Length: 157
Image 1 (spheres, one colour):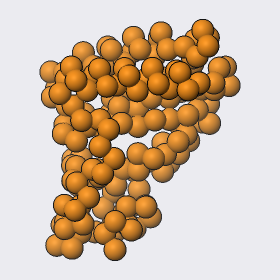
Image 2 (image 1 turned 135 degrees about the vertical axis):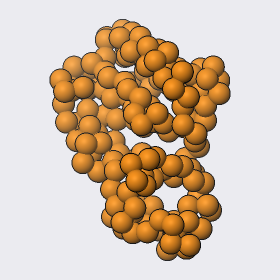
Image 3 (image 1 turned 180 degrees about the vertical axis):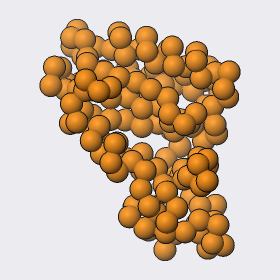
Image 4 (image 1 turned 90 degrees about the horizontal axis):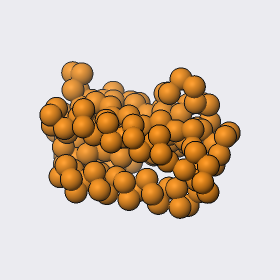
């Protein structure tokens, strides 16, 4: 990942539930194989994939070498849909929010997230994951931010 440009494109998919530890090495192997073979218009993509916190699948493409085309992005979505079915994951629910408390990562659906805030179980200082970041630089600096500094704030206000 260090070899990729800070401007590399990023896509983040989160599982609603924590991925079982027994599945992680196999999924990581699938990710590695996928990015090694990932192409755009028959050109190999300079890409990276990883699984973080037992919940997030992160794909990156350094487009300085070759840009990710619509077809190559479609192939990544198809690949993730196969993983989703094979390992009984839910990677495409954008209305589940993830946050960190006491070093643990939790997920809550939108309404539950708002209730947690109302009850004071999470607050403006709670760290949330912004899976809408689009570059490697933003992944490193803006992916995990305080709730008060995130778009998530409008979901609880």
